[in-house]
Length: 247
Ligand code: G3P
Ligand code: MG
Picture 1 (tube, protein in one colour):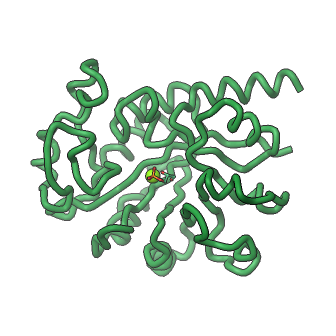
Picture 2 (cartoon, rainbow, N blue to C red):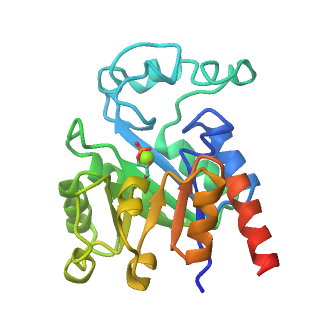
Picture 3 (spheres, rainbow, N blue to C red):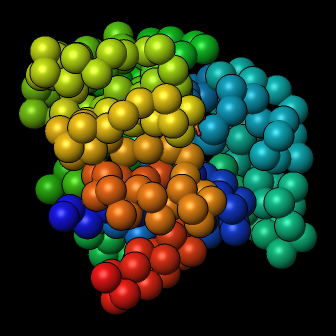
């Protein structure tokens, strides 16, 4: 059976301030197979790593990411909202995260989710392709989005990129796995997963999110599902090891 890959959601979201360098450092430290992060465009068209359209929830600032420059975003404290231990955390530019992963000799998969489902961020696809088309990058890259147009644009820009369609529910029918060859991997929600009977073919082509509960993780590992995207990669990897040694 296939070994389920463990992807660290927004770094290690459950244990560190999401989408910051310390969260990515933690994801690498625990040996995650993959790291997922989210990107938006700042007012000065820099690709920045943050989940929400606004900075309100994950920083001490207020406002839309698209209305703040990178320099303004950089002044915000992106860690204290999570814990006083992380007052030095900043919102990283995608370039910084890529450099950090190169320096850390990360050899897994970086999943870059383009958050174009609320704002289109014209030009973001070109920018991420450019930032990731570097010979120094020794890790694999997978682009994902809830916005199918974004995935099409990425493929048009570079037909060799790997893309995954994100969906929550009712977004895609399983038959699409046969008919839509453009998407190589599916990133459905746990909600979708609970409602479906998974065939072996589907199991090989899905990375499920967000899988945090021990029982759900164990189910995915025992079923040989391709991947889980989890807020707790250390816990998930320990469980996967434990199951491997007991079966
Ligand atoms: O990529 C899986 C997951 O990150 C999608 O949802 O809202 O956490 O970005 P969200
Ligand atoms: Mg995401």
